[in-house]
Length: 450
Image: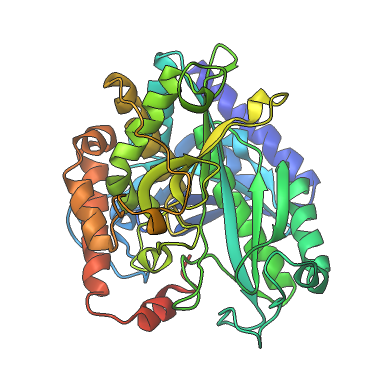
């Protein structure tokens, strides 16, 4: 009870601080099974009550699809029940691109205050704690890619804005004021930006942020996307984070970087294994690689995701790994000799349709299972696997990825029946929704949903 009183007192202090900064309201977010960020807002004066009692949000959102239709299945009954969104004060952030508003991610509890087993953010926390119990810490970070246009259909064509050369200075110059405002807003919100630059596709950009703990990395993925969206709107631009914004073109990824630590030591380097990995690091990555076909149901959860996962597009379409290989599904980065902290692995197959909390939690579960099995990595791929041959292609459809997911004992155990059932129900419904659809119709239906 004393801890609860202290938390309410802290919320009151935070509310006073925000009000003094001109903040009127607080946005509370959760990310649903389909990868859509859903919100409730409260006046800043109501923040202490939100911390004490939570804000009502029914469990039916676990069964929402990306088009806002609702499916059935799992352990959730659509019209019944209620949950409470409890804001995380440690992540409370005034929004630089939305003056007068602050943001906090929320955990979901039932009306008695018990953690809800279907809460995606609490799942990420559980998996983080599972690693901590083994003496392991993970540092994770997402790279976010997006495409901007000057209307509500930001497909990357020469007639649209910022269509200069890939990675080119011309594209940067055209939108340098916009990119400066993106950078300024992120920095003002305490986000440690590492890189911001034009990407391959016309109108496409990418921002990379410093690694954090797994839950924090997922929180940052939410904050970064919504900050970019807000700055884009203020510049008269529309941002698309969808896996593909034009059929047949290179799409948007949201790659996940990770490193494994123990007692302050980065286990991704200075070991006796392949490319300097320790045995623990190799087993972790081997577990992730083994589960990757099933993990795609979480990390690439849209029918549009499989339009992006094409060979020879740096999307990671094959179940292989390689040092600095941008075509491998898992790219290993050894880091410079004098920057051992930088050694990490990058999962390239994921995109921004994913719920980032599900993504980080499931990767941890897969990696820990690899450690339990003392798994080892196969030989690395040093070229384009599409040209070399002999590598297993990752699922080419959501239906195929879902079949792997449903057979995964590792992910079922980690997620629990409530959350596992919700994922299966939503993915089945999304797959059925686009059965027989053309790539153009899939893109049109998903371009502005994420």
